[in-house]
Length: 180
Image 1 (cartoon, helix red, strand yellow):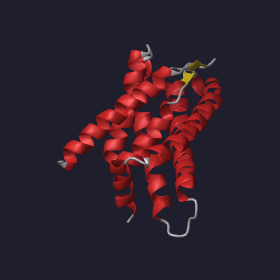
Image 2 (cartoon, helix red, strand yellow):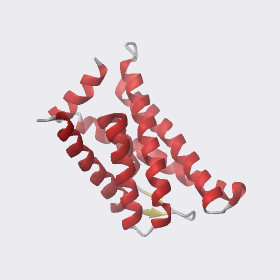
Image 3 (cartoon, rainbow, N blue to C red):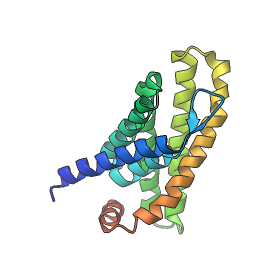
Image 4 (cartoon, one colour):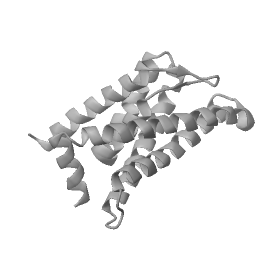
């Protein structure tokens, strides 16, 4: 199959899965958002699809979840924040996987990538709340604990799903081609 076409198909699939995982189980928070499993798919998009296609899939899927869930005002920020989170998370994961001496590389890479992406999410939504929503620097701090919990959910979801997805020959082949 044409590599470019395969990347587009997998990107569309990951965008749809990100959107669905974000919308299917939502736990509202006292802040302006909700806790969900979509960030696990954001991280997996960066890991599985790389910096270009993974970034697009994560950002677009997350943005559509905001639009479909009635959070239209957050959609542009979500597009950028989740795309950057996938980029950072996937990049950190692949840098760790290339290191020859790490024994439990996959789980460590997933956690480290998730933490890197989580820093982007926490910082991005803090700045968005403070400046674009007009909450101010002090009030926007109230978002941080919930975004930290969201990061933990994302890391847990990606850590559970990556070993399962790694059993799919196409995914396994693409992942290991990047590390050799």
